[in-house]
Structures are given as structure tokens and as C-alpha cells.
Length: 315
Length: 280
Image 1 (spheres, rainbow over the protein chains, first blue to last red):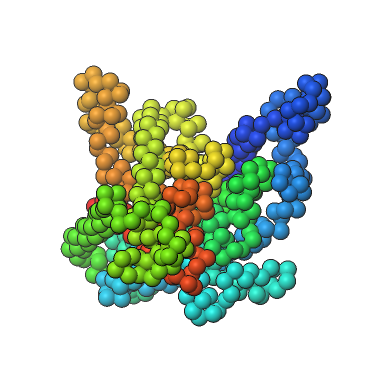
Image 2 (tube, each protein chain N blue to C red):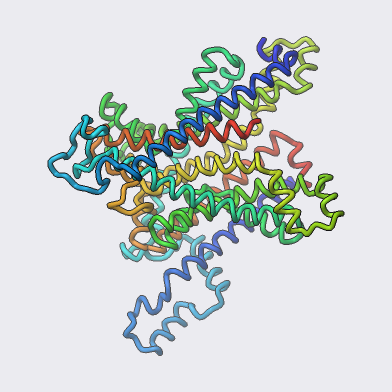
């Protein structure tokens, strides 16, 4: 419990640090809001009074605090280019990106765990060898290129989905998930292959340790030793990796959304970057950062539950 | 039964392992050298001008005149892939230089001296490290603007924490070793101990993380130019070619295939090399 509280406090501090950095950085580049809204022709008195009104003369930390409270309330500012509240622009995009990352995550688990177990149990067999070679090549395919290959193969040749024919989740939830399967596959592929490689090498490393010999000498069969002892320990580093990939997948979806023209957070982030629409960019970066940090904390906690040694060491 | 064998023939299996790793390293080097030659040929004797537009050659398929075919403007894809490989490599090289240089400085100083500065820098480092580098690079791009140099700088900064982390761990280990203590007794300065004594001893770890760095940098550069915020047109880049080729996928699949394969070969080469060095 102490561990959980400690992790939570660290996370809150990190969130504050990160958002403060983002806030200051964006405030520096976006220039003086009073001048930009009144134009350079305005009298200094008018600019000064608007600055006071907007609170731009307050210390940075006060401005940050005000912004953070507004942000938590759901007021994320007004988009420069669309002249509408940022929150209405991005809030319905969050589930799209999250669903994609989650499907990708599940696909990765479904693929990597059985394949990893198989290859490590049949080390150096010809199937293992060929899987490793294929695995190594698949690992080198960037998600946007595998996305293009998937579009070509499943979309154009096999006609399993219409490329670019995104179906919104509030219209047809099953169509939505069916369409999202393909971009999720593109995101999952490189991560799954990495996980296979990690799981395999982790199992092989564990299998060399002394406790495995002890377990054998106590009369356990290979399967008992494997599933009760080796796999449990070998999974620990892989679980850390899984946690890291979930955050990578959320970030990776920014790119894959472009390939499959999915209107998620990534799309709007990129158009906003090229439009210099700073309030939108800032809001999206903050939202993704908080998601990333939250996931990291959960992974740390999960990890300490699975491996009690961690939380003891940390004290 | 396999696991059983493993325990009793420990030594043999170890030998087998290192041989296999060398094979990885050799395969990786061959691929990387091949790509280097490919790139150099493009720099010295590119078959066509990579930006020359020839409207009569639009979407020409693969032929003897145009080995990889032509794109939507009739530009020679082979020349463009060569030039794009160079652009990708340039950014990756710059990124790794920035990342390693500052990573070594931060990692060495924090690992060697420890104390409050170490604590603060590592806290910052950890919170940056927790971020996917793509997101970090996008943040810097939105602050700096798009372009080749900006992307190099953004990716370089995004890569510093991971290098710093690795170097710091090595320095923590080395700090209490005998050779460092002896060097101290002999009156060597801290600067000398850090850069002349400890640093060269971390080379295996450094080398493999540099290779991983290249691998990630190629991927990141290609992603950035795929998103249109890296190398700016009309200069060719592998990522941008892919994003353009995507529109003409049904008409000219070769347009997407070759830049994609070039990216894959670069990543595959560097990751195999990293594997070979890393697990010695």
C-alpha cells in the first residue's frame, strides 16, 4: 500500500512537471495573446488592460494554476483555426485512438505469448529457427509500411475492408471494431514480434538457473517446471515490456491513423501542428502524456503485485 | 526435454549462442554495407536526377531504363530511393550523434558524481524516458517547426535520456572498480578518469546502444517524413515517398514497395548488428 501511494505521488509530481514544461513552452512560442487578438495597431493602454483582464501579467505559476484548473474542468481553450472549444473538438476522438491501441494490445498478447512459449519450448528446432528469422524480418517493418501492405493485401486484393472507409463508432459499433482491426494489426505486428523475441530469450535465460535443476530433481516433469516455475519468472521482464508498448501504441496510432484515414487524436494533432493551432496541440499532448503516465503507474503497481521483491527493494 | 538438456550441457549451449550472435552481426553488417554502397552509388552516379519530372514516364513500370519504375510525376524511383536513403541516413546520423554526445555527458557526470544533481537529473530523465519518443519529437516539432534540421534536433533531444540512462548505469558499476581506484590514487583528474579510463571500458554497451539508436532513428525519421514533417519536398525521402505512394497503391504498387524495402533493410541491418554486439 505504501508502495502504491508512493507511486501515485510520483506520478502526480511528474504530471505537474510535464504539464508545466508544456505550458511554459507553448506560452513562449505562441506569443502575446493580447497583441494577437487586438492586432499590432492597438494602443498600449488597451493591450495593457486586456493583458490584465486575461491575467497575462500574473506570475507564470499563477497562470499555470489557472490553466490547470480550467483544463481539469474541461475548458481547454479555443482553437485558433476552427474558433470552437478544443474540448468539443477532441473529446470524441479520444475513444477512437484508445480503442485502436487496446485492440492492438490484445492482438499483441494473443500472438506473442503462445508463439513465444512455443519457440522457447522447442528451442533450435527448425520451426523455432524459421519463426525467429521471420520474426526478425517482421520486426523491421515500420507500422506505416505494414499498414500499407495490409491495405494492399486485405483491402485491395482480398477486399475484407474498404481502405479509407472509416465507420464511426456511434453509427455502427461492430463495423467500427471491424475496421479498426486492420490498423490495430499494423500497430501490433512489430511489438508482438519484439515480445516473442523477449519472451523466448527470457525463458532461455531462466532455464539456465539453479532453481530449475532443483525443480527437476524434485521429480517435476518438463511441463510442470516450465509452467509453474520458469514461465512465471520469465514473464516478469516481458510484462514491463507490455506496459511500455501500450504507451507506445497510443503514440504509434498517431502514424497509423494517417495510413487508414482514421479520424483520431493523431490526425487532429498533425493538422493542428501544421496550422500552428497551439491550444489544440497543447491539449492533445497533455491528454496523451497523462494517459502515458497513468499507464506507467499502473504497470509499476501491477509489477509489484506480481513480483513482491520490487516493492521491498524500493523501500 | 529441451530445457533439461540445457542445464547439463551449459557450456556447449553457450558456445553455440555466441556463434549464432556473430552470425547476426555478420548478416547485419552485410545489409548495412550494402545499403551504404547503394547510397554512395546514388550520391556519385545516380541514374537520373531524383527531382527531374518527366511527364511522359508517369507510372512507368519496372524496366531496364527505370529499374524500379517511375512515380506519379515520372521521376525515377531508383534514384529517389537512393537519395532518400541518404536523407534518412543523414538524419539518423545526426540524431545518434546528438543523443550519444549529450547522453554520455549527462550519464557520465551523474553516474560518476552522484548526489543531488544526479537525483534531480535522473528524475527529469525518467519522466522524459517514460514518453514515447515519437510524441516527444512531435512536441519539439510543434515548437521548432518542420524541416530536416528541426527533425534531427528533435529526435536527438528525444534520444538523450535513453543513452544517459545506459551510460549512467555503466559508470555506477565502474566507479567502484579497482582500476578506477588505482587511477585516483595515482592522482588522475576526474576528467581523465571519466573520459580516458571509464568511457573506453563501456564500449560494448555503448556500441550496441548506438546500433539500437540508429535502428530507432531510421524508424523515427521515416515516420516523421511519412507524416510530412521531416524532409520537405521536392527533396526525396523514404517516408514521404511511402505516404505519396499510398494514394496510387492500386495503380503502382512498386512505388510503395521499394522505399518500404529500403527502410526495412536499414532497420533490419542495424538491429541485427545491435543483437550481435549486445549479447556477446
